[in-house]
Amino acid sequence: MLRLAVLLLLLANAAYYAWSHEWLGALGLAPQRQDEPQRLAQQIHPEGLHLLAPEEARRLQGLPAGTECLQAGLFDERQAAVLRQALAPLPAGSWALEPGRLPARWIVYMGRFPTAEALDRKRAQLRALKLRFEPVDSAALAPGLSLGDYPSEAAAAQALDALAERGVRTARVLQERAELAGQWLRLPMADAALRARVEQSRDALAGQPLRPCR
Image (tube, rainbow, N blue to C red; front, side, top):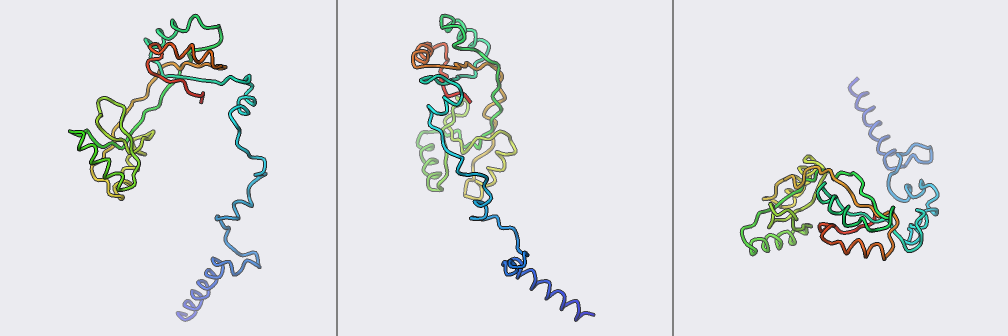
């Protein structure tokens, strides 16, 4: 009985080995491959995909030539009131303030550093580890460095664990920003002249740049 069990086990291993190495492909017995070029063969009409130039994208969105949708924000109620007054002379329908939210943001953070020299040393160490970083914008956290931003504390903690495996020892997870509610400035069909007029209201924009609409 034991010999039979051993024989069946050997046969099962041999069959699995042949199957996993695609030796039984001619019989229709082979694992489904997930590498190239099989995935390419599964694409549906890939020839129909192409990148759009900015002008072509605007045309497909129904925007007149030479215009684009722009937005800025988020603005709190006080900032929105100042902006509303500053933009009142512009043509009706050329701009709008719309309610919106910015999600909370968590970062993998290093700092605050006591001196500029300490900050420079840490930057050099991170470059040696081939890690990306950027200075933090928050006055409460500067001078400091962010090694990535994430939508949740759990995601940031997972990233911190991965960084620890690469030699990062003094970073920690912090909430850089709580969820914010406010209003977006939206220019649905901005041409160069309208953009220039809006950007003249620098104080009303509170330092927020105009960007393409999301």
